[in-house]
Length: 187
Image (tube, rainbow, N blue to C red; front, side, top):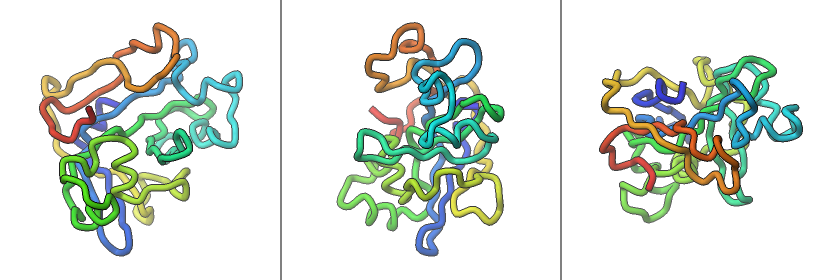
């Protein structure tokens, strides 16, 4: 799913303005096989907590959590009910509502508007109130639309970023995907 989300559009209506961007970078956090020790759902002996409960629900909803007490991060739940799985949206290339994104991100060069997971949530004003939001319903304030179909050779993969002390093999799993050459892919 992380690879399939590359090229789709993340859309949010904020203050009546449609904000959107093409998804250009993702990371998978998977329930398959032995517990992915980088996945929030693997904590608490694999049982849901107040923070992770959404990950244990149906696919197609937002899992938005506060990271390091500073930033909101946006994920798409992808697992089966009772199996935590999500895809972190790491970066988008802005398409619509760029003026609004500039205001929300304060003075930043355009290429720094959404080139990281915390930057994109700031630019789209995605917060904890969106946790559990259905991403496929027409009445949602945030959703995912079809985008351009990309050839597989344009999508790169490698290890995830910022996993701290996560042990191997999870630290090196090639579950980060990005659009080759896109300037909005995070550093």
